[in-house]
Length: 322
Length: 87
Image 1 (cartoon, rainbow over the protein chains, first blue to last red):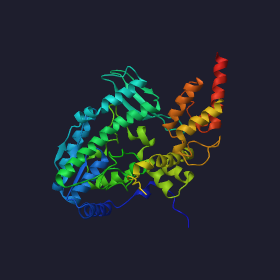
Image 2 (spheres, chains in turn blue, red):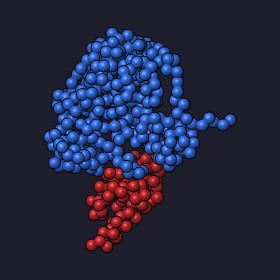
Image 3 (cartoon, rainbow over the protein chains, first blue to last red):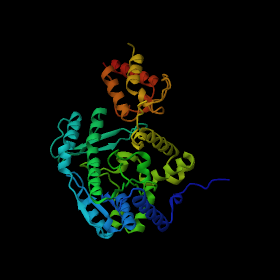
């Protein structure tokens, strides 16, 4: 039997049917499995958390959902205004928790800036920064990009020590947000819903104990392309549907492509699907409109990320005494 | 110690835990065996620069130069010879 040619249509689905299944299962898991009566989640103004919020409202009712916006001094103002717009549509109240002082107390900004100064001694007040993948073939080297007030962005290859410290310090943001989500969940007797999509979940694009931590993950089996379709079906505002995906973690705008995925999500989704369904790079190339070598590199990248992030998926490992 | 022995010792000390228990041959791919990832290669490059006085440019930072002990030795020898010629 010959397999059908790979096309973007493989990710098509009946949004109404999928919504029904997700809502039913989400309600069952929260109430029956977890023994909770509602859901707490962070809303970032992005597509994933918007979709989970809409599903949670359908599953539990708006009065049993806590939607949290957790801005800090470096997050974009747009994130908060989009979260407000979303909650209006969803019929839920938006709780705003500014986490800047918590991050300051933990040394998030100070530790990160000290690590950046190991690379760029003049980095200081008013400068902005982000991490961005370089174009180095074969290695996915992440560079530190800094920008002086009024200056041009400058890209610096970090040392491993500085890079790891910058990431570790930035991870305070995701972990602090999760702590706040659990505060409200515990207060209300709710479960925490996580918001990773399949691409992020599969590739380990989350912080362990941060955005990777949750009691239930309603969209982690949906490709990002499918999340967009579901979001449109659920009535997520157009302003969120049309916003380019961003990490909103650094003071300079940072797309998910430049930080992690190297390709726009429609192509990453199809490459991931192709790899998992046994399509070769030659068979995949026409569907993603990329050269065969680029597809093969993406396949290699996906496999390596799986190896490199395997530990993020593991639960704590009990050590037997005898 | 010769460059090959130094490079092998550094990789064994720093990256063997990341890979399988299989023997590390001089031509074993460090990427494919999961020993050196894109952060690990930054550690490796810093060691090469400090130990052999080689400045590794972004253009040189490719698996063709760093993905096995053989390739790293060849790169160090090539870069050292170029540096000598330049001086």
